[in-house]
Amino acid sequence: MPLSERQLAAFADKQATQIPYDTSPRHLAGPGDARHVTHGLAAAGWNAVSDPLSAEFVLVSPDLRHRLQFDPQSRTSAWWRLRAEPVGTEPGWYAEFGEHVPSEVLAGLTDALVAQTPTEPKGPLAVLDAAGWLIDGRGVAYSDHPSCKVERLPGQGAGTVPWREQVRVAWNIVVSDLPTDVGSRGTHLWHAAFHRYTPERLVTAFLKALTDPAPLQRGLFDCTATYGVTQKPSPLTPQQTVDAHTTRVKALRARPAPHAASRRPP
Image (cartoon, rainbow, N blue to C red; front, side, top):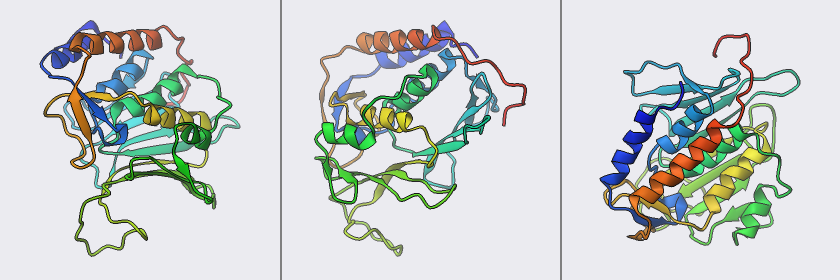
């Protein structure tokens, strides 16, 4: 499913109708436009294998190993699911992301996946430390904004999810019959969870995109977190946003795609 000029034009048309606002912190900026993710994958040769009339869509990599599912009708809090099948000595893994994960942050991970960027010397906690996050003695990192926490969970077997990010509204009151985490007074906004075999470079890429101090652009009426988010008119024009998007997907398109496997898509 090559990315067409018509699809890029549709993205540009949407941007042209918006009044852009710089929105921060990133983890409260809301989902934004999913095409930050899907256009990058399509440019890298991923194919749609889902019903085009369904609210759900599924993209599969050219080698058929990786599969990304977006399901806005999910019965769980995870709307995005990324799965890698085991190949040879490489184990399979998965990652999942909640409804309000910023698409630009998720694109940081998917771009690193398709670009096959080498492993950086810095690991996830080092990236958070360099961004000024507070890391306690248990290896749990907290953003300077009190609504974001990243923790590494102890591995307990093949099904565990060692990296989990939780984003909560800090100054909200929630009435619930369900127990909450000790000390938590906020409602769950979104999460990111990574299986224990997820390549660390991908977790690092996700956190680098998350901790980037540059604000994200959102339209005046785009969905964001209600509390704690800051917005101001952006100095960027819609055309600058479109140009940056186009440059990025063209760079991904230029990279060689992995060879297709002989098996059918999962």
